Amino acid sequence: MAKTSLASFISNRLEYQSGNSFSSTVIKISKISIALGVSILIVSLLIYSGFRQEIQNRIFSVSGQISLRQFTQGTLYEEKPLEKNVGFIEQLRKLPDVSHVQSFAFKPALISTESEVAGIILKGVGSDFNLQAFLPNLSSKVNSAPKSDEIWISQKTANTLQLKRKSQVVLFFMQNPPRYRKVKIAEIYQTGLEDIDNNVAYVSQNLVQELNEWNSNQIGGFEVFVKDFEKFDFAIDNIANSLPYNIGIEPITQTYIQLFDWLDVIGRNVLVMFILISLVAGFNMAATLLIMVLERRQMIGVLKALGGNNKLIRKIFIRNGLKIMFYGMLWGNGIAFFLCALQQNFNLVPLNPDNYYLSSVPIFWNWQGILGINMGVLFITWLVILIPIRIVNKVQPAEAVRSI
Image 1 (cartoon, rainbow, N blue to C red):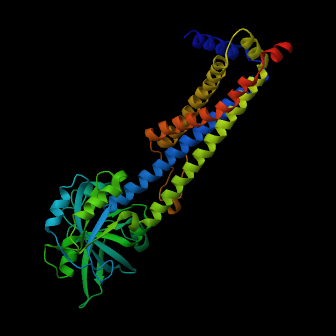
Image 2 (image 1 turned 90 degrees about the vertical axis):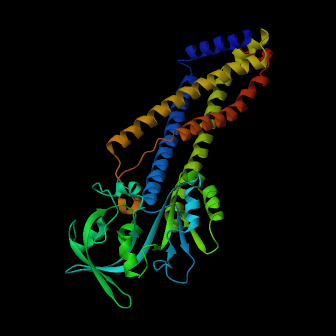
Image 3 (image 1 turned 90 degrees about the horizontal axis):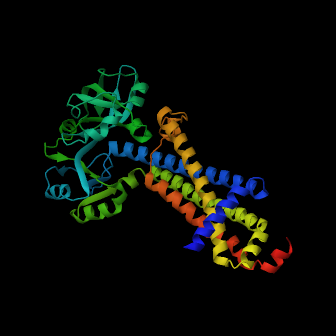
């Protein structure tokens, strides 16, 4: 206990007396570099977490994490009908990993105005439609899915065809015999996801059933929403084990593989940046402590001559190193929190939605990640600074005292 108190006392005196020494300049540079490194890591993590959260929320607002269809030789948008009240669906709804199950039915069509015609995929949704998840894409509040004479189109489709809410359009269906339906644009949505906004419109499931000559209990498939996407692999295994042999399962990571691959690339870049910055901070601290040790060789010799052992002297310099780390990390966290709070509240950094799916840089406060960065930087730096500290063992009292 006495040696620990002595180490703390000498460490504080060294910090107080090193104001005009060369090592004091190196210490300031070290604190600044650690602060910048930590702040860059935290900002990068919160931006990446923001992108991942926003993109996932948008994808999950238009589709469940798992799609279930009957195996068929047809096209993706011409499903073989499933019975809506099949027994395995009730079993799925009872699984602890499942939060919601909704039915759907796709139907390709042509949407026509007086001057324009465009191809579109109609997604028929019913009373079990997860409306709360889809609401952020709408500019107004709605209480139910589209009715039989209504259609919800994307803002991009509305701009292309010069349409607005309450406009009347005609839907043409290329089947035998060909059919058409006149519907009213009830809502205009915008997800920012190009594949959805360019191609998909929402209609009543009853309309698709009527056109396909299905009964009211027949649908194209089911979409399953899971409670925790972080446990998606575990959830999909449980769901797959509950399905009959004739039902195909398609995870959303395959449906939107480009988006999830893009997010994974960003995540790997953040990890590489973390490793590089942590190593730079560690070797920077090692260089700083090396300079401090060499500058205090005479003090080390005197302490050894007076009976101080290597363990005591190492504690002195380790305490100084930890203080440098603490102040650098404290400033780094403060800078990162300040910049991220500004971006979150004022959207100072805009983005091109066509390239990044979002209009501004998103921020998500990933507190576990922030703690992990701080602990990781501290651990890596701790390992590295043990290298210069071992020089203390090689300082001989007689040589150090002779040079005074």
